[in-house]
Amino acid sequence: MRIYKVGGAVRDRLLGKPVTDIDWVVVGATTEEMLAKGFRPVGADFPVFLHPKSGEEYALARTERKSGRGYGGFTFHASPEVTLEEDLIRRDLTINAMAEDDQQNLTDPYHGQRDLKDRLLRHVSPAFAEDPLRVLRVARFAARYAGLGFTVAPETLELMRQLSDSGELQALTPERSWKEISRALMEDQPQVFIEVLRACGALKVLMPEVDALFGVPQPPAHHPEIDTGAHTLSVLQQAALHKQPLTVRWACLLHDLGKGLTPEAEWPRHIAHEFKGLKLIKAVNERFKVPRDCAELALLVGEYHTHGHRALELKPSTLLELLQSFDVYRRPQRFEEFIAACEMDARGRTGFEQRSYPQADYLRGAATAARNVAVQPLLEQGFKGPELGEAIKRERLKALKAYKEAASA
Ligand code: CTP
Image (tube, rainbow, N blue to C red):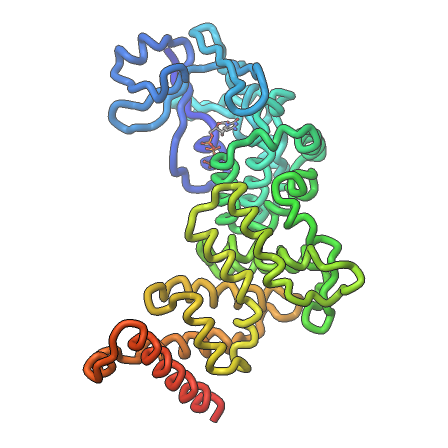
């Protein structure tokens, strides 16, 4: 049997990037031989094994044929006769379809090296269409390598368009889609992920609510970039520049969905877009079975981001309601993430990128003032049950009044 390093490990070594996990392909071996060497099978009818010591994935060289719609519809043909070239041709991109032996000799039948040099994400063969998830993968690689100058080859974008138009994307499971989306959002240029999905028509299939923001104007005084879609992309870009976590990036992407529902006659104003957007945010969260922390923050940011921007003008009672809505006493981290998302929103406007955002510290100070209200003295005064709750609220309101006065003095 012959063993080769394949895929991302080869690509990233050639790009001079750190290699995290290594995938191997095994040519000329049978399942029985692998088992005899102590490899552990990953699944019953999937020709992939884990190395007994390193735990890395070793796949038998295989050809892949699609036998039906959706992810279940695959048949594999793995046998010792399948060649390395046959295994590589079924892969997604030429830059992912190179193999390397233990002497670092490269097998590159589909010109991955040339495309690395030309900074092109190009599909290997028509077999690309056998897995519609690849539309998301290519957009994710575009987001990752945009800083190096990579773009999607026009013919690959065309194939992605055909796949998007064919309805195949609907067959993807929420889990597989979310894995790609969440990884893409954590890349250096997550806005490129959305741009590429939009360019091939996948965005209107996967997230029509986000797609609908393009072409929707906002008031130029607050939003010199005008277009709501362009603004959303800038907010996402700011979130990446500021190394925000996934929760914040997800909330950034969805915060303005309500603006896509404004009747044209009301443009460029978007009255109550915060509330109108909630049902859309909920729908997107459910579509991809988004993890709770991301889903929750997106809804809260959607509802309250304009409160964040107006923090300095809010009445103490409104400030208190805001803090209560976030359960800031038990969930301080979530409130920090809200503040971060508001700040990214403010910076994601043309000309405002470097502008300071005093609302952030003001909100932090308000949370601290409310949190510092001591419960013990109230207990000692004999407050219990709902009355205790009311008393705590009263004291917090007092604290916030004092805080606001001190801040504006
Ligand atoms: N692959 C593919 N089509 C997919 C998934 C994977 O062709 N839908 C192939 C590619 O050759 C890829 C390899 O399997 O390089 C390994 O896949 P994976 O580990 O998911 O991706 P990497 O390319 O290693 O990229 P990453 O750095 O994102 O892990």
